[in-house]
Length: 191
Image (tube, rainbow, N blue to C red):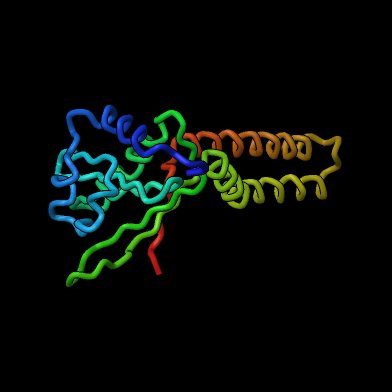
């Protein structure tokens, strides 16, 4: 979070958002490794099928969300929805958002995946770069070749440049569409 947030206020707001799915701190820590952190819980909920989401007030400008589930797909989905729920609370501004997916093995937590939220604009730039490399370069080479072989007043060269322009427009719209529909989280294996 960018600035200080009031613990009482956020607890009240989270309680109204979580409503019927809410858990008490005692219910929330049951079966987790958070028993020492029960006093930091500002909200918790249980969602079908067996997902537990726990919001912890770590400091006046830091909130941690712990999600417990049985599959990576469920955890990833609830990671996104839990963050959106938090962002919908007035007065909360986020500055950096990251995630770690841990598994417990013989009493030790092992970090297996790291996630980072990516903005729509960043997704657009990534997709634009990728599409330019895969489609734009080929169209530019074709147009350049046609310009060298044919005079610019002849139809094939003009057609090649029109094709290049159409490819560029297509790449931009494809990047916009992909960024709009893409998952806002990118995940990678932890090291």
